[in-house]
Image 1: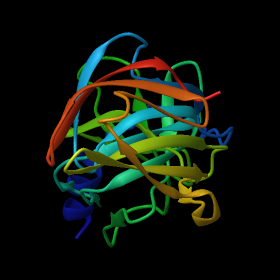
Image 2: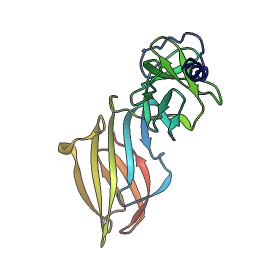
Image 3: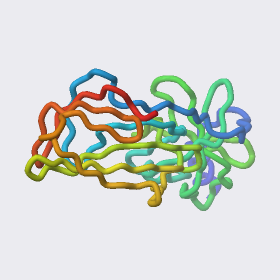
Image 4: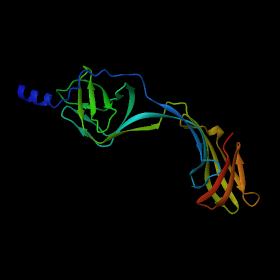
Length: 217
């Protein structure tokens, strides 16, 4: 039995005493202003024609394939960043499983360098590190202060095109501010809504080609 325990513990890569930082996610706010004024673009039915607002992006770790380690198994899923220090990022270990002989789990850690291994940090400060398929990325935060205005293309019938206006706050649609508008292109190829001005170049029931003169005010 002692030999088995020694063999299993030898598979654990100890990187000194790791202190998990819980100083939050390195989120950032990004301005959305699409498309660039004067650029000719094409949108299809259901696509965003015009967008303006702010979105908050947060850092996450994506494990693409299950990492089945000697002491811990890390399921394929997205793990939210919970902190960072000068060398590494820390992620929630929710869903990570530990073996019978393994220490309790505190967090996941990943050093900021190429080919770094993903480590399971224990409540005692030790860590077990594994190779695998994983990567960092940014995603739209569900907790951030997000607000967007958008126009969507809804198709053409005869000389008339249909445009839908939508507002989103913190990733949730605001139905009271939604509206569907119809424009007669036989009267004018320039359309506008809430300060946004668009020159329509051509449109059919599946797509619209246009140029934005001014975005939402």
